[in-house]
Image 1 (cartoon, rainbow, N blue to C red):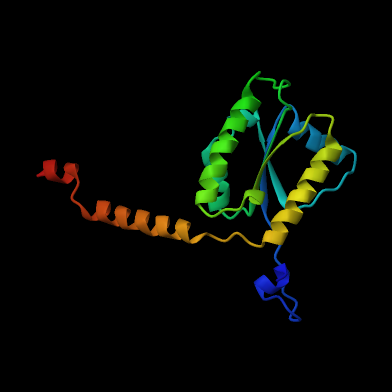
Image 2 (cartoon, rainbow, N blue to C red):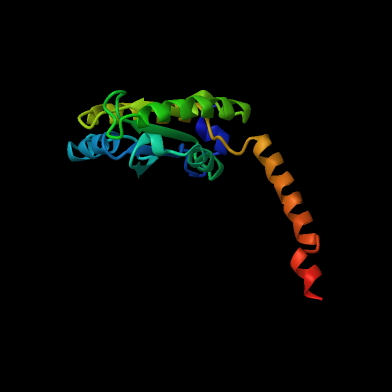
Length: 177
């Protein structure tokens, strides 16, 4: 089944689905490499939105979960090679978080190829292009993520809890009289 088939795009001219990726790139290495790729006129797939972070170790797991919840079909984290971190151990922290996130994402029904960590130094502009293009191709082959059933179930549960909280009299109301 092609991406066009998944969207129902046919002769009517509807555009085929394209994956949307969010990339969190370390300011000191991967973001600089992405800048080098641009200056060198190396074109990578336009499907990625790059977010500059000071260090890959500063990428909070919630950032990744929020990216998926807000419609990203894939998330890429790029950091300095181990041993080259501007903040000494930031990339080791990122690696530990990625390992934990992989387990969580699997439980949520999100395939491994939708989430990736890459070590890319400031001089590796060509690698940025290669990694982005490769990830876009893999996510395109997987098709749209959509919201897995579990996300919808969690949303429904949260909505019911919020409704119950709104319906309950507050302590402020009890003391106001």
